[in-house]
Image 1 (cartoon, chains in turn purple, cyan):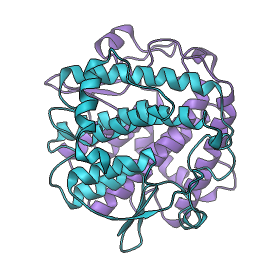
Image 2 (cartoon, one colour):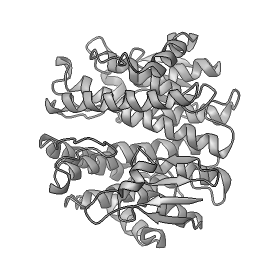
Image 3 (cartoon, chains in turn yellow, brown):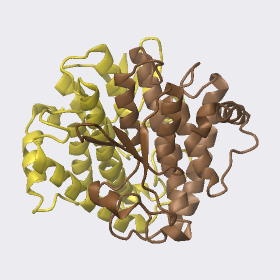
Image 4 (cartoon, chains in turn brown, purple):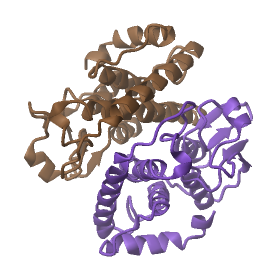
Length: 209
Length: 209
C-alpha cells in the first residue's frame, strides 16, 4: 500500500501526525508541485484530485484523511486514538468534526480566497476555475475567532481536545491552527488554555512528522 | 437518553434516516421554532447551538449527526450501516464525508446565503450576526453541479453510494439532494444513475422518518 501525499499541505498533515502517534510507517508518494498544484498524472489517476489518498494493494482508493485514519484504526487498533468505548468514540468523532468544520475549513477558506496563487482555485478538488470571493476573508477570520474561543473553553475543562488522552481530534485541531497561521491568524493571547495545549501538542514528535 | 431535534432540518434528518434503518426509536425533543431559529433555552443549555444533540443519561452531550450515529453503531451494531471490515468502514466513511462536504455544506451555503430569513445568519451555530454573501450563491450552485456529477458517476458503478448495500453515506447523500431542492436546485436530467438511486432510496420508509 502507499499514500499519495503533499507533504506540506494541512490536510495530509492530519494523517502524518496520526500515523506517527500510531507508530506506523507507510510509503509516501509526493504529488504536490512547487506552484501549489497537484501533479497532472495524479489528477488523471484519481479524479477527486485531493490528497491524501491511500491506495491499497488491491488498488482500492481511499480518500479523505480521516477515512484513511479509520482504516488504520481498524487494522491496527493499538494504541487507540479514536476512543475505545461507544461514548469515547462518539465524543472524539464530534470534536474531530468540529475541528475540521470550524477550524480546518475556515482556515482553508481564508487561505484560498486570499493567496494570489489561488485566485481561480477557491475550492479544492475542482477541475474548472473557482473564482476567489473577497468577502470570505472577513467571514473566515470571524469563523476562526469563534473556533479559538470554543476550543479554548473546551481545553479549560480537560487536558486534550476530546478528553484526558491525546486523540485524533488533537491532530485536526493542531493542523487547523497552523493552517490559520498561513494567513497570519494566530491564537489570541487571552486564550490561555488553548495556548497551553498548543505548546504541549506542538512539542510532541508527531508534530514534526 | 434523548435527542434534541429540529425535525424539518436537513442535518438532523440524516440521523432520523439512520435510526429508522437501524430500527431504533429514541425520544425526540423539538427545539426548532417557526421562524427558523432554535429555542433560546436550548442555546443556553447547549452553546454549540446546533441540532441534533444527543443527551445521554449521564448528561454527556454529543453533537454532530454522524458522531451521534457512531454512538448507536457501537452500542447496537446490527444491522451494520457503517461497514464491517476495515476497508468497508473506510470506504463508507469516505463517501459520507464527501456527501457532507460536497453536498450538504454547499446546499447549506446556498440556502443560507439566499433565503431572507438568514440574511444575518450565513453560518450555523454562530451567536453573533454573520452577513450573507451573495457570491456564494453562484459558488454553491457550481459546487452542487459537481456533486451531482461525481455521485452520478459513482452510482454508475454500484447500487448504493458506498457499495452494494445501503449505508449511512446514502442517508447523507439523500439529505444533501433534498436540501439542494430547498433552493430549487435539482438532480440534472442526464444524471440517470443518480436519478435511479434517488427513486429507490426515497421510496424506503426511512426517507419519511
